[in-house]
Length: 221
Image (tube, rainbow, N blue to C red):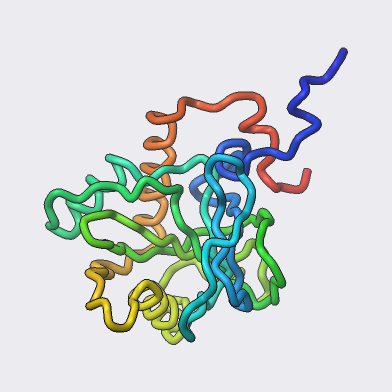
């Protein structure tokens, strides 16, 4: 039997990869950016190709591998949760896949790869009037971080570095202070709730997926 033509092409990292059979308890994460990057990489949503977004203009660099969870979307359900938990009104989702930071002791030299990660918590970030949550996870089976299950077990200095990065990386000298706040640091149960909502937001917008969209989760068989 002749295979479908799409078998000859790389899957789209956002739409063509499963978030994982065990999601949200364990997820597949697509890594765009690593701590050593001197430029900001970002997935081109139309083509699925990693593109250079901009040079890193200032000294702040992301302290962990950073990317998103495939087939998630920060939409109405994510925004509603942020409004409920923070008391802010008129919040909307930022329209992007769910962001994720993955803690690991290993040096990952470049992005554009899939990893298996276990969520341990997250940051409830409000950027202007948009919900822009950042899930914090640990690399599955990582020697240093792999046994961490909750945010309270994570080194405080690392959490502070992640918070500082996201509070400052968009600040441009001379242009006034950008209205960004981290309204809440939450633990694993809330992180799972947020991921689940982002998966439902994706399904509402894009549908339940297809043979291609579920063909790869990055898990060893």
